[in-house]
Amino acid sequence: MRIDVITIFPDYLNPLREALLGKAIERERISVGVHDLRDWTHDVHRAVDDSPYGGGPGMVMKPDVWGEALDEVCGVQDATPRLVVPTPAGRPFEQKTAVRWSQDPWLVFACGRYEGIDQRVIDDAATRMSVEEVSIGDYVLVGGEVAALTMIEAVVRLLPGVLGNPLSAEQDSFSDGLLEGPCYTRPEVWRDRPVPDVLRSGNHAAIARWRRDQALERTYHRRPELLAALPEGDLDKADRKQ
Ligand SMILES: COC(=O)COc1cccc(COC(=O)c2cn[nH]c2)c1
Image (cartoon, rainbow, N blue to C red; front, side, top):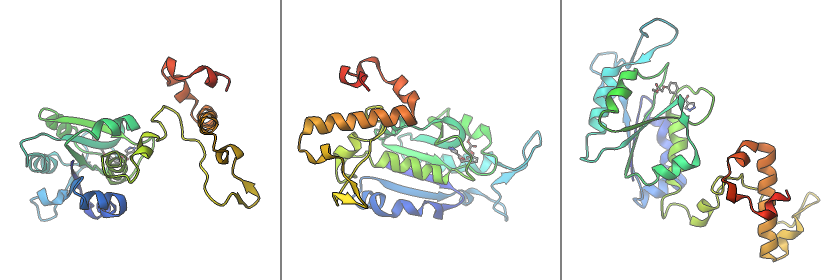
């Protein structure tokens, strides 16, 4: 997978080079390009924003600069990328989004700042490629860089050979529509708190049942709407006792 990020703060993307993601780059599971939007300015001030038409607070990112940047970054291969624009006004980013994008050969992230990017940039790009305006949550960040890092990590960890143990990606929270239950490791007792007996019983059926019950209970208390969204057949008879 090829990933490009366009931003006015390229250093914000340095964490991509660390740890798990850094290994994925070393192993050539992914190649990453980070591009400074100001490289496509032509004025002495290297301006990337201007006042909003219609008035109002803040500044809007200029279409001409973004247009040239996207033409170049998205034009380097005869393939066309999926363009992702992190924005509070986007469709929610979910695990299923990460799963879908993990099949893509090329993702380009356009990191907006200020009040946002001139809408014509999105509309123009959408004539040539798939464009998705995506939100990582109902809050406002200063720019799209942190959201891009979040989404890139969620996608790249699903790629083959990136995670040490591929099973853990399959047993993620949400992979069965429920939240992950509690987990435990040594010591057996810690500050007078023992590990639940069932987990040390060696009875794998009982352990699986207990884990499912914990996931159901946690989902019921923290995210009841996820239970309501479960496909009918997913809750088996044993679950209904919960
Ligand atoms: C067309 O899209 C744009 O103009 C994007 O512009 C902006 C402006 C300000 C901040 C951001 C960053 O995204 C978020 O804050 C965000 C994403 N998820 N939850 C919060 C992006």
